Length: 105
Image (cartoon, rainbow, N blue to C red; front, top):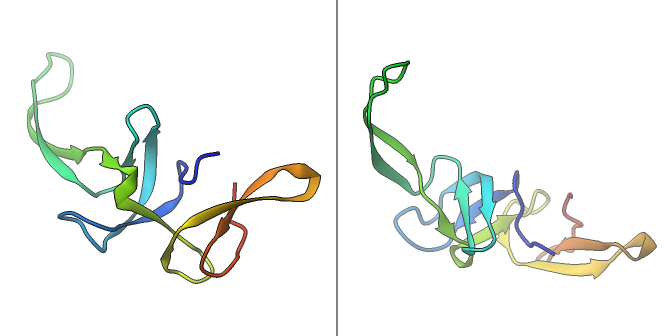
């Protein structure tokens, strides 16, 4: 079971964006990384196309290692570790280790 999923709010624990929060835009489980909205921005040089894009230097998100991210619990509003427990019908549920809140999804 994935501890962080697309759509979750996460906090960055280390690096240049330490302390910032953002929404997960996409997961890369094979690389152990995630794309987080407006975090870990890098300059990307776009080539212009005949059709529509003018090209030039744009900023876009680069993947961040999952080890550098912590899920933000909606109840206690703090970055916390995520546990897993069996819920009703023996389905796995993600749980905040700080307050015990069952996390969505």
